[in-house]
Image 1 (cartoon, rainbow, N blue to C red):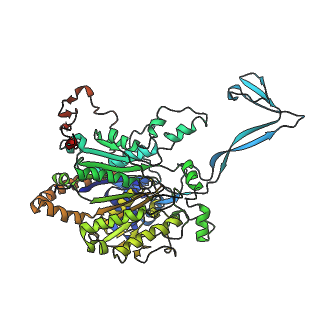
Image 2: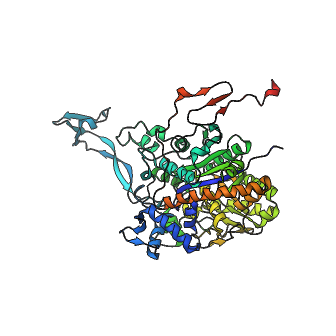
Image 3: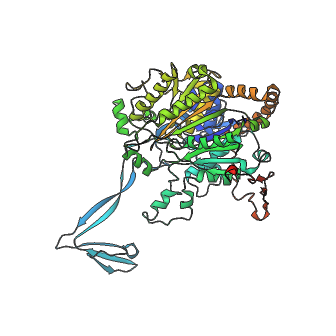
Length: 634
């Protein structure tokens, strides 16, 4: 039997409401009060540079007033915390107190006295209504006299019923880190997040690309809602209605596949495989499956997998609110019997809740096959052994749950048990639930988790749900779960669901441990973590993520102690480079990789024959197929 390559995770990066993902900073924000003082201070300083409350200059940390800082005190720590995670929507996105809209108004003149008004002639409609009489006036103006009725649309405003969101840290603008001209926010986030993941490896990308043909790299990335701000489809759809011109960039940059295209064109310079598989809220796991299948089969040796979503626009809020899916201020107030909505606690997975909370996020991981990772001394953060995807069958409602998630999760647990044994599943596994914070999800998902736990004889399955902190970022939602799992592997803390007071009475939890506070499971005490994701339309996915300790045991068995010793020696140097990047990013220099128009390929210099193709700028040639897998049929 041919050796199947193991897809190992060697890099991670991104940005979310909790901060920077690389080196587990965003994860640390979620378990901040449980961390040791050194880790806590390290992440607070990094977070302070994102918000602008702290800077690093002249070899010292300084506060906003320029005074030197040796530690983040309690007051500054609280201020930084208040600028992260779920909170009231900030005016950068839109003003929730003055949400613009147009209201129709029908006017009618009396039979005796016509109605008159004046305006610029160029503002007249192309087709003049029959009951309008126009008279030219000086300076390009006209007088309009109308008899009867007419309808006008007035610029108005109202208060948004939904005011909570998972936003990037206050004061942090991803577009400020590179020359982001006319880029929609989601694509700005893609560039920054993918660069963060690339830099986190501690490996030089150009050196890696000398070791393999360029077609053995792939990028799978996208967004569910496309790019909906003014530089993308939002501006495209609104321009004429607002009296503005459509730009030449809005249509192209609005595509939902653009995150992958931007990573290829401006971060990696890749000519390898590319694509985006969209599966509603399970989109990251759909792309992750494409990546691990590529590596298992040997088609690719390095795969970037990630997603970006910037859905905090009035139209997206309006759409999900119309479905009754979002937590409204009124709903939150009713839950708490309070006159004031607690926006910080708007998302309460598995608690008494009233809807989910929208969020923005961009997350990427870097996968390598195990052999290439060992050759380069890459630090292994974990591995993805399987991802399972199933639909729901016939449905009455496109948003209603179905049996597909039973299939995906049962397959995932059975697969991990076949690999690791019953002991690992029953005593050394955890699950990051979809945990959207809707009343329907808390019942249906908990029922699935509890049923699977019962079947596999899991007594008290630790359950996390990071949407309590980050909100629901749609396409990258399960990537947010992945980042939490990798952090848990590194630090041992399972983030508790601290936004709720108790598990709801209708939650199925006989076999589940749904903690309200952080739980110290211990570093190295978890062998496998499961990611569960449910999406509109019957998009269900579950993934198995192996801990780095378990992966090391597997690799030692495959390659032997001598190879592992050589690997460890190389890894020490790689980690030193990676730590230097972490320190740089924490001080504000993210080293964002944006290669606009650089090192472009001269197609005239391509070398091509019937066996291979050599692309200028790449050391190794691309081998062309010489045999067909269907040869026996000819």
